[in-house]
Structures are given as structure tokens and as C-alpha cells.
Amino acid sequence: MKILKKYKLFLGAIVIILMLYIFNKELGLKATSISIYSFKEMLFVIPPIFILLGLLDIWVPREIMTKYMGENSGIKGVVLSMILGSAAAGPLYGAFPIAAVFMKKGVKFTNILIFIGAWSTTKIPMFLFEISSLGAKFAVTRLLINIPGIIIIAHSLLLFISEEEIREIYKKSELI
Image (cartoon, rainbow, N blue to C red; front, side, top):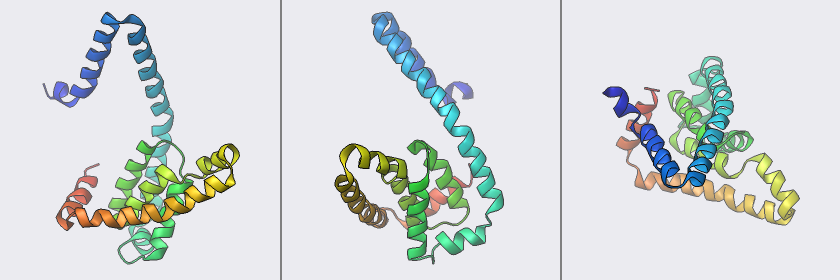
């Protein structure tokens, strides 16, 4: 029974796709095809991320992470979070396991939010694509708006999240 409860969303999705297939075969096949494609994509993205996480966890001591990205890191932590997020590869769901390891290593909460924001909006490959497709003026303007926007949003979120909630988030990250 615990297994059914644990996988209820997955099983529910399968039931929905089966019902979709029964009522509209073409749409059901398309949904199945998209699901299989997404699953394959995850199989190629998730293992390298977890290997890198293991290496980060072992090779980088907590003291180093705290020094450069912890509570007293200042602008150095913000810049490093922005660089790490921008240089990252892969879809956004890859950022969250890394954020969990950052929490275990004592990284400041705002720096984690900045890292996730940078991962989602300031990736270097995306910037290069925008330059070639939309022009340098657009790409640079978007980047110059996004960088302070990410920092402002990260700090603004602290107004809505209590210290207790942040401690709870850090506590949950240790269970992973």
C-alpha cells in the first residue's frame, strides 16, 4: 500500500494516458511519445548531475563553501552563485539537487535562490543563441535586466519567508 501511495502521481498519469488512448488513439500515442521522450531525456541528464553532486560533496569541504557562498560571503557569494548558475548545463530540474547539496554545505539561502534564478535565465548557451538569433542588443539588454532582477527577487523572497521556514527547508535538504 505504501508503494501505491508513493507512486500515485505516476500511476495516475499512466491511467490518464490509457484513458486518453482509449478515447482518442492519436492523442494517446502522442502523449505516450512525449512521455517516453521526456523520460529518455531525464536518463541522460540526471546521472551526470548526480555524479557531479557526489564529487562536489566529497571534494569541496563545507568550510570552503561557507567561506565563498555562506552567510558572510557578501558580493563574492552573489557573483559566484550567478556564475555557477549561468555556466550550468541542463534543464532547470537539475538545479534543485545541486541546491540541496549547497544547503548541506552551508550556502546562504539568497545565494541558492540567485543560483537557481541564474540557472533558469542567464545560461551562457542561451545568451549565445540569443545573440545569433535576436541580435546582440536584445541579448545584452535582457541579460542586464535579468541579473539585477534575479538578485532583487532573491532578496525580496526573504520578506515572505520566515527564518523558521528557511530552517525547515535546510532541514529537509539533509534528508536527501
